[in-house]
Image 1 (spheres, rainbow, N blue to C red):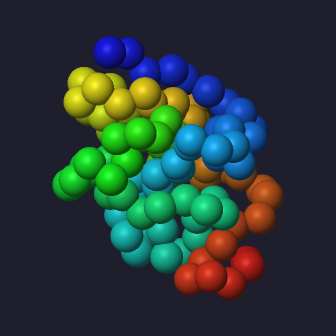
Image 2 (tube, rainbow, N blue to C red):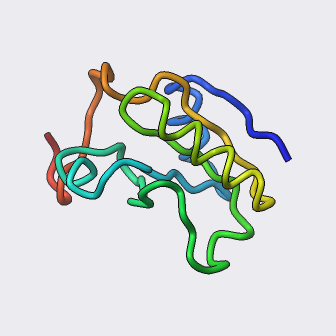
Length: 102
């Protein structure tokens, strides 16, 4: 199974729809520093159970490299995956940190 590359805005739009989950595949400390609203910390995109099997998965990292690898892995596991190309490093919108708006 292949994954689909999307823009950051497309990922944000999809994440607000039913049936989608967004994974931040960066190191946990980077997630704590700031992440997209609603994103779940899932370093390297490794899912340890089937709790997301019925979801379409959106992945992102800082620059797009880690998320591409995670997308490839998850697609190989049979998930429907969308990779945010270019990551969020240059994103100037609102991020959330430990539940607080930055």
